[in-house]
Length: 207
Image (tube, rainbow, N blue to C red):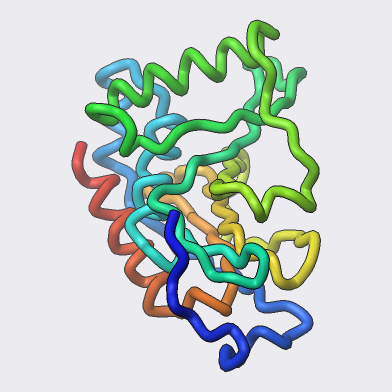
């Protein structure tokens, strides 16, 4: 990570009761959906990888305020809830960025094994107090595969949280999928969110 020159006192949102806001938009997942079905890959994991790469492509999404200073991480890792096939076991996992691997398929297999090991009790899941998560180099990802939602709101520990929260939903009959992202207006404007969705669609279309 690196400290960056950013004047917090002049930021118009720094004294708001909450600087958090969210946006939802649909992306087309036809190519990735077919690729996963034809190659026996997890659509959940591959989608998570595309989302993580898209988040890490936007510098403003990788910023935090720590000890009154603005820092920017090289890459964010991901935290996501996971469940077993019977939906009886619910845990969280923290995964490395796809950028640390030779390719996305190598990363896919790493995440698949990590998820299986956590659900089988071979490894501990991710566990840290909510109040401390904003100090970690993570973005939070969550899938709601049962709902093709139009919009989504998120709870927040406090209004000055910076950590991005990304949620994606059910794939509809047109192979479109809603993706919601919650960010801090201190660092992230609409332009950056536009870049996020643009880069995400490019990642989804690679397959």
